[in-house]
Image (cartoon, rainbow over all chains, first blue to last red; front, side, top):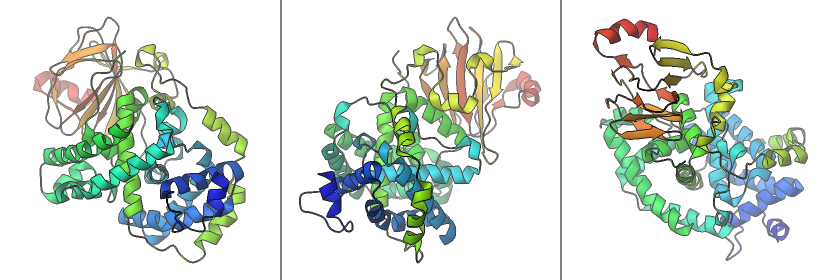
Length: 201
Length: 227
């Protein structure tokens, strides 16, 4: 089924009714992992590259460095496709963690202390049900809905943390609010997201 | 062994966002390797990152970017076998803090077992070891080893601090902390951990700014401690 799915996908806008984007992406990852499909890779590249580039540039990289980081991220997706499973979350979340880790490594400029995501080497499956694409899909929808429902002051903190990569102390300085307020807004945002994920698991 | 002291949600979010410094990240990663609850919570932060990537506006890649990367795929490919081996490295069971083994992220950084650490004695019953960080890292990461009944000299904080107990236990005003527990402290929170286990209490401590020691004893010790 995975092969049939990915053969029919020319790009991510070819959404077959009833099959969500994440299921299609997971099928493409599967194609890369098991059949080394360059076509599948190209589809994912078209989707993620411009988004990752935007992400990196907002964090301060110039166009050249951003594209460098994007290439590295996507090459890592190519090489590590076999490590993806729904237990890791959605494909977008997985790609995000790869990009995040690569960027951290680049910032540290130190090859010997690579940021090794514990999930790559130490992944433990605590919950057998978590390896289910449909559940991941539900989670993804829930997170997006929860994000849309966030008050602006909490969304602002999240944006500054994730997109602009600011440590909490810097966020506090930029917004001219106490660090405690930054933390409590993060916690509030977080507490809105967690129950939505936990009910589906 | 049940973990009773967990990471602050704000810390988990910052970690997932990639916004924590190196010292703190290592403490968080080490705790996550042991704690299924916090590990699951950290996934929530990754989901958030994924959702943000999906929603973010696009920045077009330069001409030929796809062709360039397609051309690299053959040389970049690692043999499927080696990736399969990597996948097989997943442990079937989560390591247990009570087992005496270091959490994998810390073990990888240290490269030696605890028994081979070269401790530096900074006060009676208090030993320390500076864990190496990248040259550009701010903040400090240390192992601390406290003998039974010994109190750390009273210190305030110039910034955030995070302590993960690796073995043994200590008591402070927030309760007892034993292997796997993490103390995720705000600025200016003062605490006086007292080791209360028979064996030395060994902790991993990340600090955002140098600890300052209070009192005249503190002022004498400070330059030697170099914390």
